[in-house]
Amino acid sequence: QVHLVESGGGLVQAGGSLRLSCAASESIFSMNSMDWYRQAPDKQRELVATITSGGRERYGDSVKGRFTISRDNAKNTMYLQMNSLKPEDTAVYYCRITTSIWHVYWGQGTQVTVSS
Image (cartoon, rainbow, N blue to C red):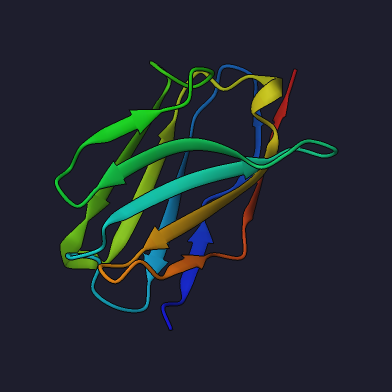
């Protein structure tokens, strides 16, 4: 069982920045992939960004050029740097890990609210 704890959410004005963190309870070095998802009220959960064990990054179209995913294996932590935030980025943000044996774990989520 891998425990994930997100932090860094909050209230920010449009155009501002936030950095989310996702701390894992064990080494992330060999994880197949690490992802950030988000879910806005009355909407489906959507993939925001992915980073693979090889460091390859992918982003949802709505955040390309504004968000950056990264990982620090030494700290067992993944990050999501969010710049130029928009009101439509308001959501609960979740991190997800897929282990080397394809087990999937989710964090509890952190609220991001962007005011206009």
